[in-house]
Image 1 (cartoon, rainbow, N blue to C red):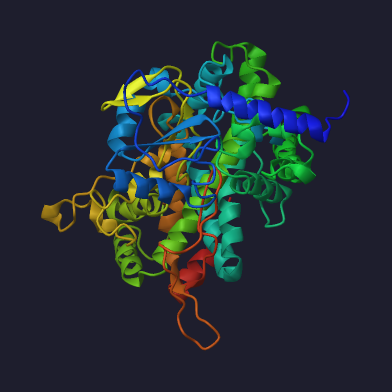
Image 2: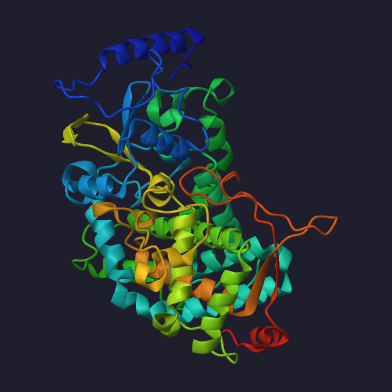
Length: 517
């Protein structure tokens, strides 16, 4: 195929501009949701900020007093849902027309395929993947993972005590170790394990490439054919640099499990279970292929490791400013767990305050402030506002968890906000937006919550998280409202400054003596 010339690119751009002029949604006389003024042809391309878009959408929602905001990028209609009620109405009650996925050109360029997060609901692989995934990660099945989760939580605090300056590496190791062991049976034993590097590299592809479905190459797929030196979005250059990371995540764990099977040393895992189901041609694994198993494990590996890491990073970032909250949690843990052992998942029903700390972490900074968009397969009308067919629907978890009309003082880390007013709280609802809605709700929620809970409980039981100090010995206070957060499919605070020490010599001895399996 001959290389495209500069004249060819100009012709493509002019043709696309004409296409945009003709591609105006017919609203049948109904108003679109409100939104800021747009520019000719470009729409809101230069209006939507490249970072912090979730905050801009939230502010526009307040300005226009609307649950929905409408913008368009180069002719692509986008509807942003800012309220929990609207999200429930559109996805739980009208999920049949608002649960599809658009084509994610950027992620496809990176090498993602057969991925449960990105598959269209009309794709034959979607129900197959979801059914197999749910069969392994159901609430009853997930109970068998408890020993692994508690074992890794002990390794987490032991690593932080030994290397407090490497706290985030220890958090990454914890998040990756659990999901990798569940998905492939491989146990991570050191901080230089190759799979930690794979997870970190994939994390870069998920946070460094922009919001899925809203990158320049997603809106204008023909941009993928541009050479990297003249791609204004930077997508082709990013793909060229980081595609190897996704390839490694798909191929290396799979190759290891296949080799272990051949050697007779394969450990129980989701991948082993899926391969056995495929070999037996069970109903659960109908139409399953090796490539689909790779994709499904990639879903678990990437999404599970990154979201857990992001959540725990947010926990450290949020709780470090509140020593009094740590003291309350520790008092509850001392009463239920005692000084002679580490927390177990069976302790969870007796630790309501620690549970509220976990949910406040979910709310404080959602790991998917916007998340991957849905796509409307039919036109719709919501509260008198027209939603065009083919619209991208972004569900703004940030807006839902920072709405002052529901969540008082949203930038304060306050676990008691969920208590009833009779109990001294504010009666605010537990956050739910972080796990998605309707047909796209996270199938690994039970396992994910257990991972986060046992990590938070164990850290609060034996560690004190204090503000870091500058060279003059003054405490460094970071305002969460003005702090910087990573962008992309998942998000977490960019910088976490803290000083972590054991709560006591007894706690230090307890962790040092604890036998991990």
